[in-house]
Amino acid sequence: MLALTSQATEAIERILTAPGVPDGAGIRIMPVAPNDGEAVTSELQVEVAENPTEGDEVIEHEGARVFVEDSVCGYLADKTLDAVVAEERVRFSLAGQTA
Image 1 (cartoon, rainbow, N blue to C red):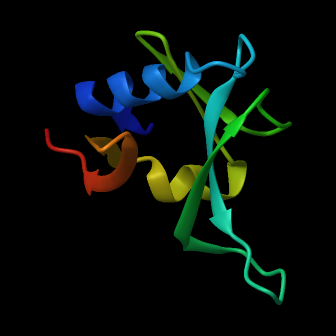
Image 2: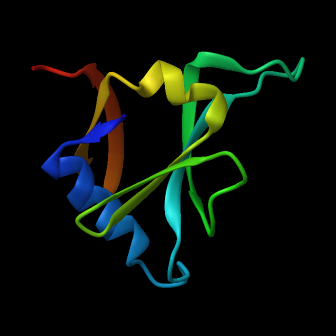
């Protein structure tokens, strides 16, 4: 299962408590769909989502909610999500989990 660093958890909480973001929302991780419509699991995008969609894996950690699209769950199963916040922008990154 995708793990979250404390920095990622804090960044997600900050995003989800912003004005206009509904209660129960989360960030959704999904593959980028190029123009041909065929998703590539190694290219991912993140967006705020009001609710998970059917089949999403829901990860809740210390107030952070992450919805992982079913098609990338296997790819992210052994990864850790980290974040860096600079000038009010969040940059997420993935790394392999350490034992």
